[in-house]
Image (cartoon, helix red, strand yellow):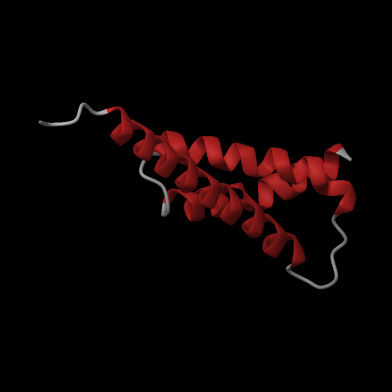
Length: 90
């Protein structure tokens, strides 16, 4: 529900952003990945079943970790494609 989502966001947005920002090269990337983390969390809220105190944080930081990993994999693919497009030296 809206109140639960707002409470989770308010409680964790700063910490999730700091976690992501420490792992990506720009503020813009961190903002985008933080937003994506919360969008995914909202989408998965119905499947989330906390089993202990702190479970929300563990769940959110796992989502954030996955978003950062996906970001780095995509960046590596873009770099590899850019290298393939460079002209070959004779």
